[in-house]
Length: 288
Image (cartoon, helix red, strand yellow):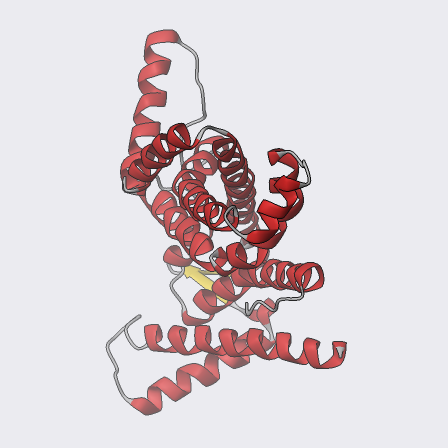
């Protein structure tokens, strides 16, 4: 049982890694000079595969000087990964909390809150990012109190990107969970639990949220993509030295592929663990 599961999981990771390699090989056709021949594309794939077999030998070039990709890769990699994982954790905790608190309100009041949050969800992430950055600077000029460190090339900023990256995904997750909770609240098992005298808090926490895990996890990829897209914009717009900046600085095929695979690896592991958890608790299978 577990042998087949492991094989299936590894197969999925290898297929996605192969897709990243194919994309990197295509980008390589335009890196230094345009060469759209299919034979060159195959050579690029072979070159990337050989490089990934020996990552310690990958060299990056800057200003006519060459350096080993490692260990200089680890600093921007772990910086971006910490921001990404922290934003993901904030998103899920806040999204579930907001949906839970809203569901406890009277129906008319909860509907008003839902519409307000849905409106804010339509605001572009770039606009939110600029507003937070600008507001922090203005508040500092007027009060001398720095609420958050602002972004810069030589500084490791955490609070601002984590907050910025988690705002829109939190609103998206809140809307999804709240809608699913509304659908669950009219089902027979909820009415039966209410007739037994169980409180609304108990029913939501013990039954409804557990039944939502499968549906919520199906939206997990969309939330991850939203956070990643905002992370790319943040790093490029404010010149933050993260994984995006590293790849843009050294746009070699093997660097792009290895960087993307390394960033995808913990995401894949997280998705797999959550899928196994949902399958164990609900019996439903989620495809990561």
